Length: 244
Ligand SMILES: C[S@@+](CC[C@H](N)C(=O)[O-])C[C@H]1O[C@@H](n2cnc3c(N)ncnc32)[C@H](O)[C@@H]1O
Image (cartoon, rainbow, N blue to C red; front, side):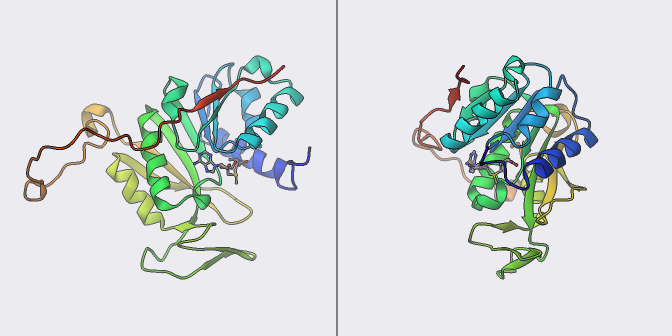
């Protein structure tokens, strides 16, 4: 299969080993954001109980390859579910997740989409759940506008794909969503680092999602607002059913 490049096994195993070291259990509900042709999925699906793997992917052609991988690896009985969506409509899966992974997704997204993805992930993460995501770091922070050589000729940019993001900014996004943030050890061949967002307490401790305390003097005066517009154009996530 031509999509299985030289990094196919290495990157699949790297993701699987990371999840094992972070305590993924067969009974966990797992969401793979930007699952591609299931480079990690073919390792993770056999480990999980049937029905526990959900993949979201923006590129329909890659989902066709993902279906081929499901058949080639005899994974139908594990009932993986694949959704076609580029706007993170995770609610279409109709459940909450213990573990969410976005491998090599943020390097291809502008910052608005990164933030949007984090909020949508937070909405479907169980209270004890974790969201893992790789990114290229910009350790000098937002004031650094230069390209960065990450590793052996891999160069990242502030306004071009592959993007880098300051770790401090992702930590800030996590805090705003009442998450803790940490970097976990990960030996990515091109120098991406693995971030982890997880709740630091129960809902009683931190309040509902996005209940970020605002200082009294910063609160805007109450005003009438027009009816809410949807944040994204409504083309709902489409569930792809693996063809026999
Ligand atoms: C570099 S690939 C990584 C694929 C997979 N995570 C892996 O490690 O093999 C990035 C994937 O994210 C997908 N993608 C990009 N933007 C997306 C979005 N907004 N929603 C869902 N998937 C997206 C791409 O189509 C691609 O399959």
